[in-house]
Image (cartoon, rainbow, N blue to C red; front, side, top):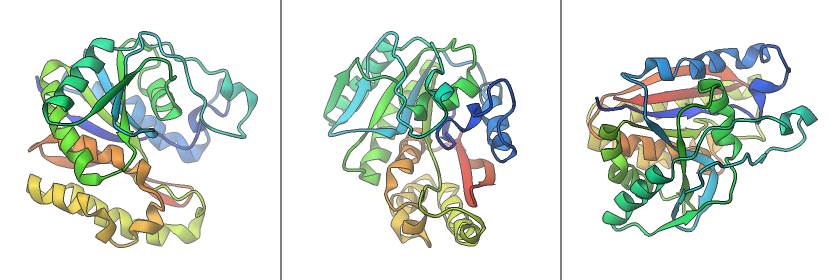
Length: 265
């Protein structure tokens, strides 16, 4: 069974866990419901997950080879209890090495590290999707140059993992402008989201890749992403999706932003 690939929103900081023992604020509940349903929506349960977060950049694509990563609380000014969250999923060093090998076979320099904890682009959405922490996870960094075409090509190199029971997940936000939030943002965010979705779901895979790689040509591009690190995980998921049909399988408004999730396959 060939796994799809996903680009998911990971929310804002620890947004799903702000109210201990209670549901998140109403604004975040549709996104929470989407994330809760991810594993059940797959054709079969993955044996492992390769996750690319918008919160880890290295000079070269780098894999995390740790067996039991801790958590890296890379968000600021939230309630004290949100720095005591736990998510104890096992790492997947075998998958990390396999991913690095696939990248190297396509000419990409790669690195390894085993100390850095999982950032909140990993553990926050995965705490919702995998509360039992019972599927091994390997994290892959972005490449610091944030070159869209390179990240799409990296995704293509990783595509064989889909036939090996691995779910490839890009974790970011389709809109990410922290300085602009509120109702005044929504009209421009909708324009961006419509244009991005049209590019992502183009039925021709090569045209799709070309359009998304040229994301800065889309209307409101730099308003949506003053810096594009939260968009680049989409490029990897798209590349790994290959010729599979692309769909938008989540869309909602939070903070005045239009936020979407995409599936390939």
